[in-house]
Image (cartoon, rainbow, N blue to C red; front, side):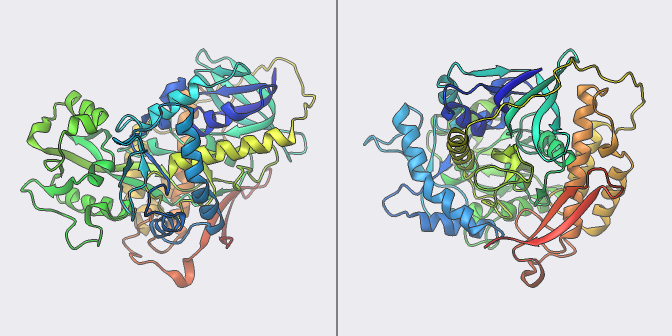
Length: 525
């Protein structure tokens, strides 16, 4: 048994921001499913949004965030995080050479979709996530222990089931270990790998959300999945993200014949909200027509976007032709483990930060470059809370854990089958018939009833994917309107009378025959 002050599950920007700022006398342990540098945050090409420009103001950033989120956002959360953004960026910038600067030595501010001002800071052109992550990794103090290739799979509660006290995890050889702590932080990311096409790292399967659900935590807004409009698309497969900053620099979406596809669709055309642009591209793909990103107007593309250039060249795309084939893919989960601004979940001792959490910042659709911002904010805010409250060690059963000798053939689907059916039935465009088909298909596996200790790591991934997919499907079926990242072809309009600021919450009733409650609640104002 291992007992720490703080146990962090996940190794993205929110996790590292937290670890770096915790008091040095605290014992901090980071558990990561694969390697420290395989988190979604490390792959992030886009930047971080903050109202830093001479003509900008947090009120404008707030307005853009609410508009993109289709006013499903928690207004207090939006105000708090957006107001803190400039100081968070300045503090990071003062610590080292993290962000790109202009010829005057000022932070270079770029434009992205649905923003009304240039307010996106970047690092290394299109390698912002990598730059910030490497900066945070370099600042990790000696009191932080990193455990790689450790698959966390079950949250441990006290005897009264009122507090989270630890987590069980499997090593690559199948060995089970228990990690206890005064503060257990879920920073495991979203669930992009539930869909055939995604920009997400291979590890991002919804593990943390499923674990929190099984422990009885409240899960909220799972129907809101953001599909990024532009992933590199070759021979029916997506190969990597083409950042929204490319369209911010002037690229436009065209057909093979060069006809612009966003004319007359949205006032902001190619820089419209992501759900609008994704749905438009999807319409063409369903008709068998390829869509391209025309980059011919961007000067010195390879210097401005070195990461994207490398991805394209690795996949045989000749950038001199000026066209990159694209398709939308799952990119970000607006929902997740319900938390307050500090990251506190509905279970004492359990926190969630980053994409695994849902603070209400993003509403029904995340504004571009607000995700890394949220991770930085939450890591900073939670560190101050833990530093001020201290820790209390508790006595736990310290016997070595031996899993029960039970051999059972599991009825679990193939991972690719999960991804393909979710893309087909619960993807960019949804309807009641397909959602009910998927709900029935997922229910047959009884994934939330399986004893996890004897499962392989592969089977654990399947179980968590099925559980998270079920939460998304059920929420999407219940919300009978279209809003942000949730589009129903049978309910194509927003229904403000019945659904404005109404949120769907899942909560597993531990020990009861009825295992899940779907709760429709009004958002806090």
